[in-house]
Image (tube, rainbow, N blue to C red; front, top):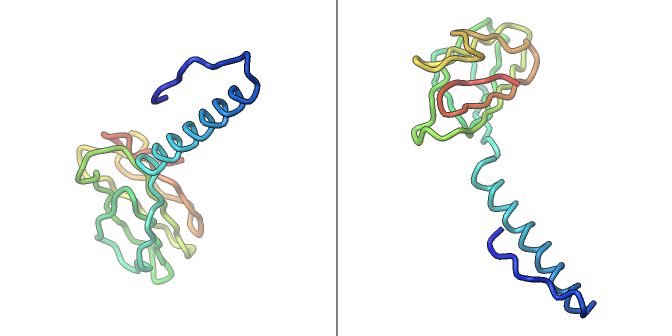
Length: 130
């Protein structure tokens, strides 16, 4: 909280005003935190072949209809924690391969559900699938 002053409890109107201001300050600060740390991933154009590199702040849309393929997960340039979303539009397997030294759920390879959606989190060192 930026600054919480002493509340005046003897005056109901003043107390109500102070509580409303506190509520507004909390909402503003929560919005600032969300905007900084929980950026909405930006969708990619549908990806139909492997080899691309993806990172936090993206919503990878993969179309594996033509066959299974792999994509690479890279740490963000700023190294800060973040999240991304992976959507596999088809029934073939999309493999996620984190670039060394990062791991995905402490292994080197993971397979999101074909035809499904997976949310990934980067903690500053490794990737984690939800």
